[in-house]
Amino acid sequence: MDTYTVNHETALKLDNSDPLKSYRKLFYIPKDTIYLDGNSLGLLSKPAEESLLKTISEWKNLGINGWFYGNPDWWHYGEYFGELMAPLVGAKAREVIATGTTTLNLHTLVSAFFQPSGERNKILADELNFPTDIYALESQIKLKGLSPDKHLVFVPSLDGRMLDEQQIIDYMNSDIALVLLPSVLYRSGQLLDIEKLTQAAHARGIPIGFDCSHSVGVVPHKLHEWEVDFAIWCSYKYLNSGPGGTAFLFIHEKHFDMEPGLSGWFGYVKSKQFDMLLNFEHEKHAGGWQISSSNILCSASLEGSLKMFHEVGIEKIREKSIKLTDYLIYLADEILVKKGFTIGTPRVPQHRSGHVALEHEKADKINQELMKRNVITDFRKPNIIRIAPIALYNTYNEVWQTIKIIEAIIDE
Ligand SMILES: *Cc1c(COP(=O)(O)O)cnc(C)c1O
Image 1 (cartoon, rainbow, N blue to C red):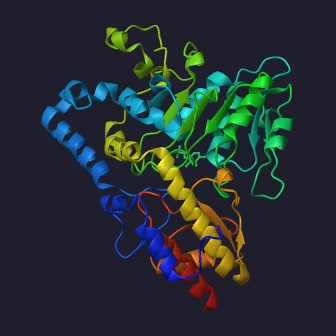
Image 2 (cartoon, protein in one colour):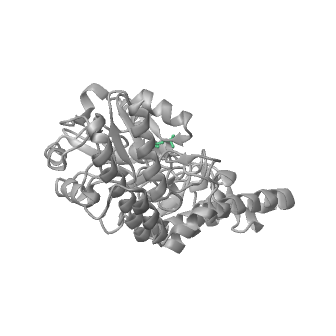
Image 3 (cartoon, rainbow, N blue to C red):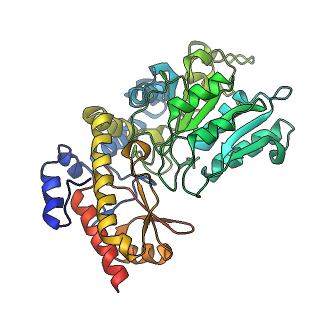
């Protein structure tokens, strides 16, 4: 981190030598705006727009025949995008499917993987997880006739920001039937060691799933090799599919025989789906976990978007993302810490994802002032401003400008 200096030229130099700089012009950046919220909703790119418009014209010109003659044909949409997605998360093609929504996918997976039996009848989660995951776990526990008060165990956080991996492992006791964790904590941006946690869970005979909404598209994964049992993630954050974009799920091939938790006709063995038989027979891969007809218009943008990720490669994206957040942390240390800010994100790059959490007692007010100046970040209660410089479309200059604007807001 000591390679930077506090001046504008450094930012311009970093931009000049940025190997990914040509991608920015492929994105629609809101006018006169510094957009640093791609961890909540990624921006539209021209390739994503083109593939979405292509699909709309298929609907226009083919009507129902789009299911068979669209390109790709709509009937295999989930599988097609699963295959495109798989290399970005280190999975085999058939282990990933584009389907449904994040929370819904969590429901179907947990309803199958949470099999309380005897003493082993609890789910282990953490107290910093995104609330929707906890709501889903609570309702899955209730559906099994159990009570969340007794059957949902939370690993506490020592400082309200981070989790300690060893402590998580210490909670994996003989009463735990399933572990569900986020890959990245949505407030602090801490990236957990998925491989280590998976090994520890398996050594204790516990299946483990991860919500990778805040790591996919910015951090490389090896879900297959790490033997993660299942994972879910959304596509509208770092993958830039647009609001309401179709989500993904991963299920390790060793579980392909497992009966999906919530069945539907799109999970039926594809070759027999239109036999319209009444006994459910699931496809023996991730496709079997689909429930309904694919969300064609909510998936179409992914074609253009994912192709960019393939062109650049997730390693290069990670490299630039780390450099952007390093630079942000450096400037915050030099300029903002003396103005009452604390950095709430791990400083070691391997332990964080794509955003930085700046903490300040007046974070809410500061974030509102940033909005007035067309700088889009987000505020998370009680005291966090999250800033996500995105590798494909943000610049070092924007990071510099943002820190200087925050400094000016405080000085006022
Ligand atoms: C964004 C996010 C979600 C979103 O859930 P939806 O069902 O897509 O609304 C879920 N979990 C985590 C950890 C997230 O960051």
